[in-house]
Length: 376
Image (cartoon, rainbow, N blue to C red; front, side, top):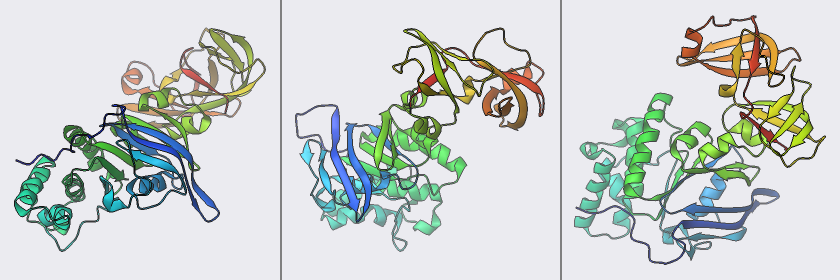
């Protein structure tokens, strides 16, 4: 049976680095779409480019594929400079958002198309196509046409067509956007398992932060053509480096205040938005008197009936909205100063106490180590 895994690497460079982007810029007329991007992707890694529409992520993906030429900078794949190589000479395959299946061809013919164009012998085509379809659990649909398949099945066929050519690098352009939510959540996990089994290096583009956090080993958040933060989903979520990242990756509560105590192991921040100062149990690099922003995730906010005994890290308000989400409830509390705070309260916690309702007086509180201080 044919092996659809990528061919063994032919170089002896850094074993961890597989894709390297150096100072890449892309300019369209007066518009700078990508601004001096530097990026390193590891071998066999699932890497996500995450950002809102127009941030430059799709342009960067197309430059990796060779569909767009970089205005300046260089792109390396497996230690080879591919910056000026045309798409057909790159060991790269791209799975498009629309899947781009040929409607008049069967599933089998769609997957085999690229191999036929390359002049691969017929017996080898048959073996590789069967292997690819078997991998994505679509071997039983080989004779069907795309219109006879569901959206999730069409996606599997598109993935098989991308993998059958044994690319060194697989690019995914918004791979789940055409699927409804329930199918999308199931398919995300299945796709990760398939790619892990094959061992291909993969870079995906998405605007969905949940999708990026579920699927990617690491991700890069992009804004205005630049990478503003790169790291594991856990690190970027827990330690955002700016208000933009804190607000873009998940939900957060942001407060503005001034540092009034600055010690190596803690800082005290006074904010007009809160009844009590913010005590943060780690030092910061900003000086005393500096205006900063503090991010606290909704799951770290507690909603209480009784006033906390602590001198810091709480405030008073009224419940303005409650959304029951099954396993948890999403509370919105309007503080006395007007700031609206969002808190995520597990249903098990609510079941053990008298759950506050709309217009009830409550206190919101958080622990000393749950806040992140941001200077920008």
